[in-house]
Image (cartoon, rainbow, N blue to C red; front, side, top):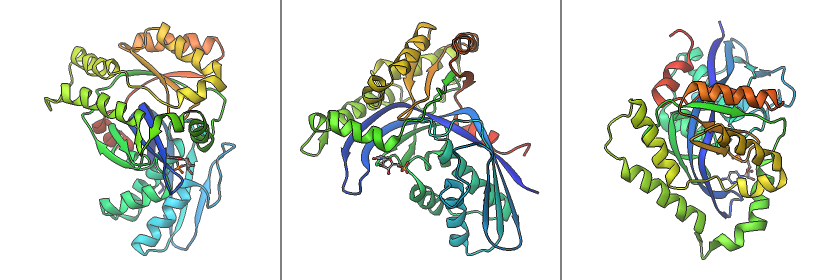
Length: 321
Ligand code: C5P
């Protein structure tokens, strides 16, 4: 029987781009937050050899370049087991949308393989495999609210934001992440990165310190008002996604969507990753639903969902167990 796993998306609450590194990646800082919108991955292992990826959605490769394939291949090598692995991807999330769909699918494959093979891959090995395959994979090993450093692959669970109503907007537009980084370098790199120090990363660090330092009671926040306060504390620090500065001028309609989210009362609205997805965090699910409905009436793809705290991420990943 195939093992089904929910593969949740992420949003970025603030993202600071630093200097390009000798390995070609950029130093960055971000807060990742998992959300309830998801794909479903089904992994089946039979006797034999080989890895097969199946996905009906255009734009998703079914060959060895697929992130799920790459993870499965590494897992089999690491545990030195053979098997005929079939990975089926039921896609709801946009491809290249800035919400980590492909990365999440790959980590879900790793969790499904552990169940299917009845093994537990040591945490350090899981992290190694995930970060080899992509910068945005390791966050999905944790879920919830996660601080991302390095090229995004160095992840730390931080004080979890409680569940918030969220509108996720997924315009029919793919933004190339490497191109967005190149555009950033051309337009802002020299100005903001001097003597190995990055002005945006320094600002981000101060914002996160202000946020966590100011609310570091360590007490889990459940009550609605306090939840709102925790988010507003973060928003007040002025945390922002640097990619907006290169992506919005190229795609002004995305800036317009952010304004619509704000006009509908979002406590915080932003581009996610390098886009093209955007999101708004709302106080009530009614406000989120009415905003998503208004955007949909205007022909913009939008759904009302929620953020997904770490505990829920872990509980809801597997079906009925
Ligand atoms: O790690 P991932 O495969 O998601 O990265 C895709 C591309 O995005 C990299 O090859 C690189 O060009 C760019 N990137 C970057 N700095 C990062 C993450 C990604 O320049 N921190």
